[in-house]
Amino acid sequence: MQQPLSLKSRLGEIDKPTWYALLSIGVVLVSGSIGTLVTQGTLSFLSPYYILQQLQIAAFLGVAATGMMYVILLGHIDLSLPWVLTSSAMLAAGIGGWAALPCGLAVGAAAGLVNGLGVAYLRVPSMIFTLGTNTVLQGLMVLYTGGFAPRSEAPAWMEVLAVGRTLSIPNSLFVWILVGGVATFVLKKTALGRYIYAVGNQEQAVYLSGVRTHFVLIGAFVMCGVCSAMTGMLLAGFSHKAYQAMGNDYLMPAIAAVVIGGTNIMGGRGTYLGTVLGTILIVLLQSMLSVLQMPEAGRQIIYGAVIIAMLLVYGRQHQEGR
Image 1 (tube, rainbow, N blue to C red):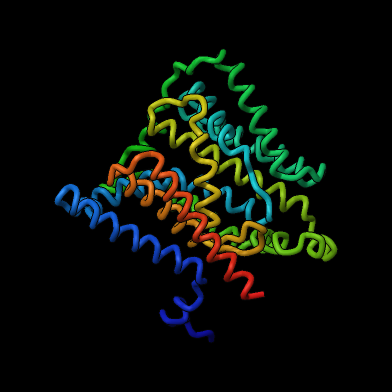
Image 2: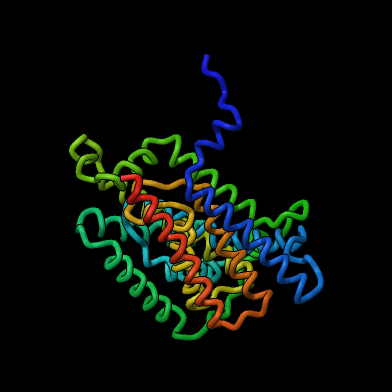
C-alpha cells in the first residue's frame, strides 16, 4: 500500500517559479502595508475585508487566465480574448434571464472552436488567426449595437455571482474555485490534460504516436473561449451592464498571470497553482500602486519591470536546466 506523501515531500514538488511568485506576493503585501502605514497611518492593506475585496477582483482575471493557460501550455496564444469576453457578455445581457448563461457560454465555445479549427487544420499561427477572430467579433458587435452602448442591464444572477457574498466570501471567488477545480482535474487526471502537456513539448512526436493532436488543439481553444465568456458575464454583473471594449484590459494581464506563474510561454510546462499565484500577484501589485497614489506612468513602469524581471529569472532557470 502506497504511503501518503509527507508535507515536506509535497512542498518539494512545488517548482521554483511557484515559490518565486509566492515570495513576490509576500513582498508586495509587506511593501503595501508599509506604504499605507506611512501615508495613511493604518495597516488597511492587510485587513481581511481588503484582501477579500482583492480576491474578488482577482477572480475575474483568474477565470480568464485559466483559459489562457490551456492555450499557452500548447505553445500557442489566444489574442481573441478581449472581444470573445465582450461579445459573450453583450449577447448574454441582451437576452437576459437564465437563458443568458448557455447563450454566453455558447458564444465563447463557438469562438474557441473557430480558433481551434484555424490553428489545427489550416495551420495558421495562433497569434494571427486569433487576432483575426478578435477583429471579426469586434465588427459584429458594432453591427449588433449600431456603434452605441447597449441599453440592456445584466441579469440578476450575473450580479449575484459577481458582487454577491456567501458567508462574507465573494461569490465570484467560488466561481473561480469551481473553474480552477475543473482545470486542475482536466490537466492532472484526464488524457486530454496529459496530451496538452505532451503537444506543448513536441507536437510532431505526439502525432506520430497516434494521438489526434488536432482534437487536443481544438479542445484547448474551446476551453479558453468558454473561460473568456464566463469572465465576460462576471464583469457584466460587476458593472451591472455589458459595454464595448470591456475585455481590452484583460488580455495582457491574463497572459502575464500565466507566464509569471511559471508556465513556459513555448508550452509543455506549468502548474495551475502558479497561474493562481501569478493572478493574485498582478492584482495586488496593481492595487498597491493605486493605494500609494502612484502616477499612471509610474504604475506602468513598475508593473512592466516586475513582469520583465520575473520572466528573465524564469528564462535563466530554463537555460540552466537544459
